[in-house]
Amino acid sequence: MAEPLDARLFPYADHVLDRLEAESGPATALKEAAAARAALLIDFHPHGDGSGWCAAIRVEGREQALVHLRGIAKQRADCTVLGRVLAGLMAQRYRLATPPRIALEGVLHYA
Image 1 (tube, one colour):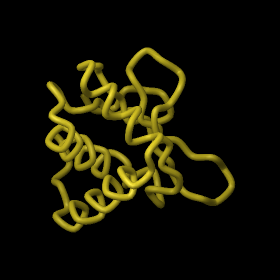
Image 2 (tube, helix red, strand yellow):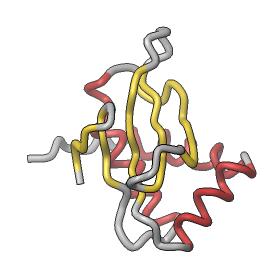
Image 3 (cartoon, rainbow, N blue to C red):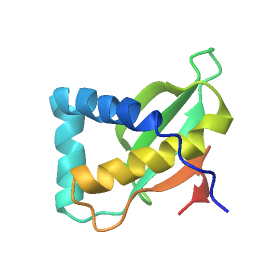
Image 4 (cartoon, rainbow, N blue to C red):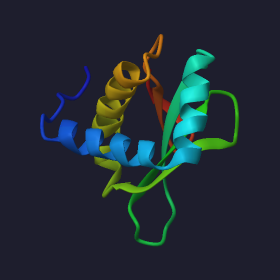
């Protein structure tokens, strides 16, 4: 069973997407992928430098990230719930046919 969503994550995730849209390159790449109805993946991963967990948003099956969100989560346990919130908000904001799937260190965790 999926972990319950913390309502406090929604304003944070909305803020992350707002900041993303302020950056023209990543926002354009994400909007183009959404317009092409590409299946998206949010892949959480650490860098080992103490910056926490990052999220690479990419088209499924491709290595190159459209967007890299550095230090978006403090610990691994935060990633799945935050990913679900981000995926839901992205589906609404970018009118995605399906929400992005979520992976932890390249392994599909939540679809």
